[in-house]
Each structure stands twice: as structure tokens, then as C-alpha cells.
Length: 213
Image 1: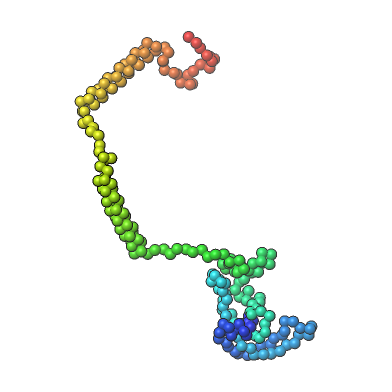
Image 2 (image 1 turned 120 degrees about the vertical axis):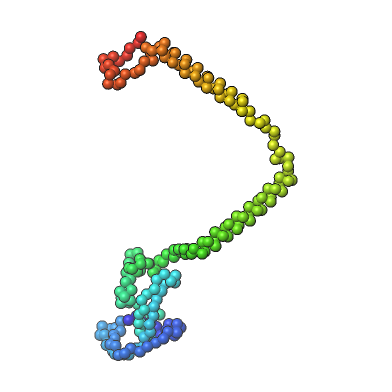
């Protein structure tokens, strides 16, 4: 059982019940001779949660007692029932099933909802409408600017494309290329001993490091 003070029960307006049978109890602090007494106490059902509502305890029955030292005393059965672990060194109370620290709660991670297909289509329609509207405004502004400053958009006359001159220039380029190839072949023939083919690496002599003609 969890213990809860009578004043807290009244302030929260909790519904109370009676135990089906009396229970034997002893005082937590005594003079060395614990006295056992039997009483039938009222109780209520409670479920605790942290302020961020990220963790909730399992419903438990709390015995209603007057003049407690604290509004509510949980105790070991509550920790065991809700799988809570107390780490005194780290000053933490962890929920084993979620690793949630009741004494140091982290801010919740907000995951945005996934939009439905109808919401996606509606968003795309709005974007299309905005794009068309802005296009209309920009075209109007551009036309007004051209109308206001026509001199900025006058183009200089350009000579028409001369097909004959272009063909002549291309023929001259090809003739020059042919002449260069013939000259290259003639030089290679005159100096064939210099521009001869280089033998393969395996066929090169190994006893000659340098030879000057």
C-alpha cells in the first residue's frame, strides 16, 4: 500500500473505499517494543505522473491516514510495482522500461505529424496559386519598367550571317591542316634515324646507359 494524508485526499476530491477486512499494522517509530494493532482504514486509488506527463505510474491503492509527515509516502512496493530504480550517486530515479528520469526529466521531443494525401495536395495547390500570382505581378512590373525606359532595351543592328564567308574560312582551315600534316611527315622521313620507333623495354640493351651521335 501507498500512504496518503487525509488533507491531500480532501483537496483532490478523491473517491474513498473501505478495506474488505481489517489489517494488522505497527508504528514505524517505536521505543523498542513495537505495538501491533488492527484497524480497518479507508483507501483510495491513485496514479501519479510527472509534470510533463511523459511518465505515469500504475494505479495503486493508498491507505488514508491523518497527520502524515509528508502528503504521500510511496515506499518500496510502489517502486517495485512500477519498475523504478533509485541511483543515490547520480541522484536519479529511473523507469526501467523507458529510462525516464523522474528527477531530471528531459524536454519532450515533438515529432511533427505526417500530413495526409489530401493535406499534401492542398498545400501543393496553394503553392501553385502563389506562384502564378507572383508571376503575374512580376510580368506586370517588367512590362511597366520596359514601357518607362524603352531606351535601355534597344538592340544594336547585327549583320546577317554570311554563309559564303563561313564556308571559305572552314576550307582554309582544312587546307592549313593538310599542309601541316604533309610537313610533319616530310620532317619525319628526313630524320628517320632520329624519330624512329622506340623498341620495347625488353629489347633495350642493358650495357649502354648513354649514347650520343
